[in-house]
Structures are given as C-alpha cells and as structure tokens.
Length: 198
Image (cartoon, rainbow, N blue to C red; front, side, top):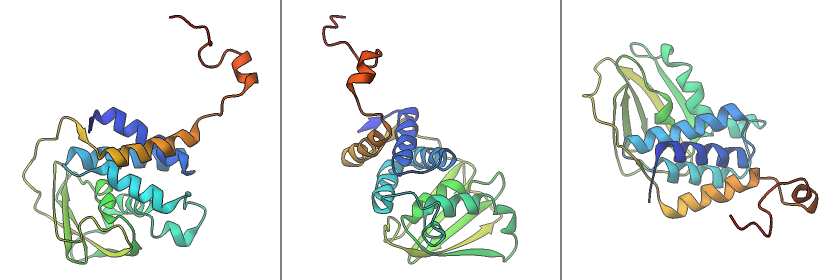
C-alpha cells in the first residue's frame, strides 16, 4: 500500500510510543522509517518487525539498548566524526540492522555498514545496498567505516510503499497510546455523540 511520508512518519512515531519509547526515540523511529522508504526500502515493515520483536522499550535496559537498531543508529549518527581514515565502529548482535542506515547520512563522503554478506553504503543523497542478509531480523555484528567518495545523487521516491500487514501492526501498536473510552470521558464531551447526525 502507498501512504504519504507524513502519514508513515506519524504512524511510526505513535507505534514506537506504543511500546514505551520516549518521545525523542519515537521521533527517530519515524524519521528512520520515512528515510528508508524514500530510498526504496520498506522502512515501515522493518520498523514494525523491530517494535514487535522488542515488545517494550529498551531504553531502561542497557544490554537490550546495545542491540536496538534505533539506539545504535542514534549513537552512530552522533559519532560520525570518529569515522575517519581507517577508523571503524563495531556493534554486536544488532537486530533489523538496515534501520541503522537511516541514521548515518553525512554531508560529505559515505558511511559503509557491513554485516554478514550485506553491505549498505549511505551518502547525503543516496543509498546503495545489497546482500542476502540485507533484511536480517536477528542479531548481527555491524562494522561501520567511512569512505570519501560520495554516491551519485538519486531522486527520492514521492510516496512510501508499506506492506499492509506491517501497516496494520504499526496501527495496533499506535492504538496503545490512545486513552480508553469511558462513560466519564463521554459525559465530558469526548468522542462523537451517539445521536450525531452530521
């Protein structure tokens, strides 16, 4: 199914909030799903898979946080200046590793993320990805390096293509953030009136 990038961003953010992610991390989740979809990958499906596997937010559990692609991506995005020359950063047992790619966009040059037989090259205006393990969902070991040459500029897609099952999963998680309907809330004007004829 096709949705606007704003719709995807908003739904992804709510879904992340639904498992308990703080606002900042939920916003990062929305941006990651949106960025990947703009580059031709189903960021919605990747995020739905991660949030379903995580079940609850990892932010208060250091061991789980070290394997969360959202946390690893945010950390890596803040550490890009470390990647110079032959320097590299490694992360162990990261699930849904392709999500990390959305966080490593640089103004100059590229970041290369590799795991198993998969390689993702990310520059400011493009992403090149391949390998049988590209869409791995179980924990893999990542190695991140920098390269100076940027990829050729690629046009962004105009709408997000999201798997319908993944969209339904995101909606279910997002619904956890909604307040339950009660007689008291209805009496105070919440929701539509039962005899509303508009």
